[in-house]
Amino acid sequence: MIEILEKAAIQNGLVTAFAVVGLIILLSGQISRRLTFGRVHGSAIAIVIGLALAYWGGTQTGGHKGLADMSLFGGIGLMGGAMLRDFAIVATAFEVQATEARKAGLIGVVSLLLGTVLPFIVGACIARAFGYSDAVSMTTIGAGAVTYIVGPVTGAAIGASPDVMALSIATGLVKAIIVMVGTPIAARFLALKTPRSAMVFGGLAGTVSGVSAGLAATDRKLVPYGALVATFHTGLGCLMGPSVLFFATKALVG
View 1: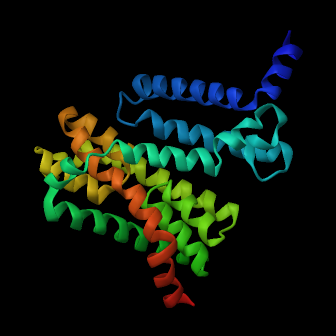
View 2: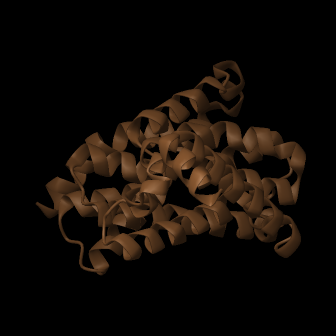
């Protein structure tokens, strides 16, 4: 029976990948509710589990694609590839209503730009401090500080190594967790009471999962407004990362 199930899983790799990811998300949701009481969003826990499994898969096979190097989980390589990744980004963008975004006004646009550029600068500086002095690595890790999606997208566009792209994802994950945990604590200081303030916060914080979870723990009514502006970070970061930010970094460090 086990051999039959294993053979079916290998022959239907993409279906197996969706089943594995679904189980991880289910487990992450339970951990989030029972152990963190919703303070840490399930998506962040799922990413940590995914990174741990990817590391384990790499050590077991000696490959560079994590679990995808195992025949049983080969479909994860397709599921996590560029095709479905870009489809997910486009699908997210279709959820945004431009008419609603205008309600944030000019301050929303300014916060969006600052929330993209400032984390990039911090991430690039940290990368330089840890010895990554080339423009490609600094840009990729800096882009990961914008969001953990922008990092690998930027890295793939400018030719970063898999190790650097993994670091960019980890950087974005750390940022998301900090936003998740810190939002309820700093909510009073940040005056997160109105939809407009939530939009500005979403623009500055940038990470959709972090903003959504943080605002959910603060005031669930503010979640759509914060997530609305934060969603634009993915598109804006993917646009600016491989172009403006990369060329600016290259001009500075050579």
